[in-house]
Length: 228
Image (cartoon, rainbow, N blue to C red; front, side, top):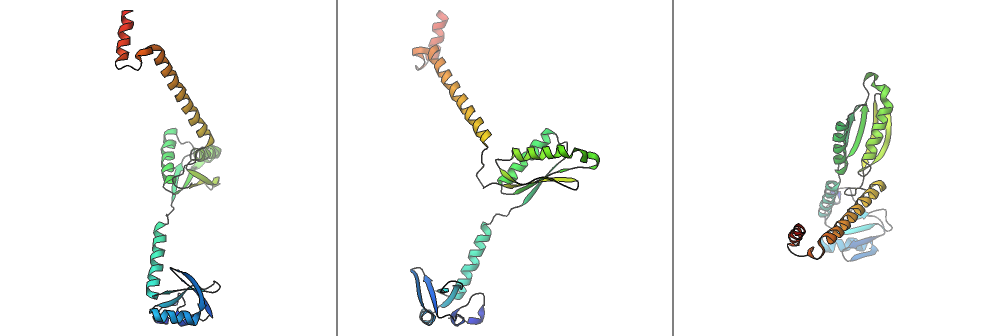
């Protein structure tokens, strides 16, 4: 058994002063007196470690305390590594941004949101361009609408000094939710393609007849038509 004074992050061994504890292990859990739990720890040459002091009764494990601390630190490190660091990426516009520049910045914003980052877009008004603040607001609202499949608006356009800000956060990773408008458009396009395919097949059947499915039938059909 280890020295009780080596670490006070968790109560161990004789530091545990309640009458009974719940001892958990791979084969389940058992409620017993703290005295019996300490005796078991001595017999197994490990420590009685209190891992959940607020439970009734407190929950403990029979484990080497150094090993237990190592496992805790390893688990925390793994959890930290899995956490995605969210950055705030800035997109800057002028009140009269041209279409080419707009599309270029829109593309970058999509990439930022797909990577799990937030986007802070803003229009900077220099000098008398503040007169075009409504135009800047319209631009940012269009920007938000064009990104609705990739992000959600956290703050609508808001003027702060000489800048008007729009904040967007990414939607769930790997799930780009389609707008109803886009789904309807894709459905119409699919129906049009299917109709065109059927019309083509029908036309080929009318033109080719028995030659349509014969190898070299097209050439044979052309020759026949030429003879006519």
